[in-house]
Length: 164
Image 1 (cartoon, rainbow, N blue to C red):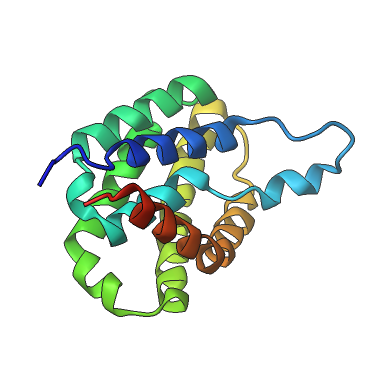
Image 2 (tube, rainbow, N blue to C red):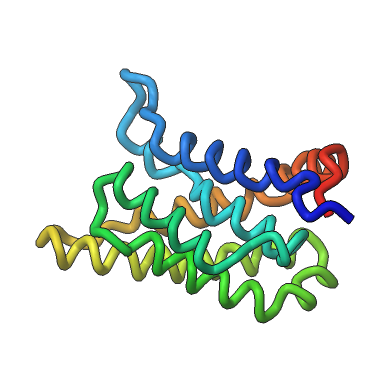
């Protein structure tokens, strides 16, 4: 078996998620629309943790998180640490996550994203001296709602690419 077969899809999905995470919303939209922005990178990470956990390495997740810190102008190491914690939790429970249905997976994703976004929000609020906003709750909820709709197309793309 070729270890590189279909491996490009992992990188493409992560970079697409990063592009969606940093893309600007169209001008003229109300401010509350930004609260409904899903956490794209944790969503894609969760998919790969459930579907192909052997394709995800902790060092690569941490490095990608550092890249995301630089692009989003957040404290260096914040996203890397949050994504690594999520990856460790996912890698330790991926066998259980595979056996539950997509709605239970969405609930698990909701809890993971809530925990990581809360931790990130606390660190950012302490670093910037700003109050903690409740935006992470809406973001995590939208991410969990999107999960059942995105898992099917991502599984199809994984099958088409022959990702082993």
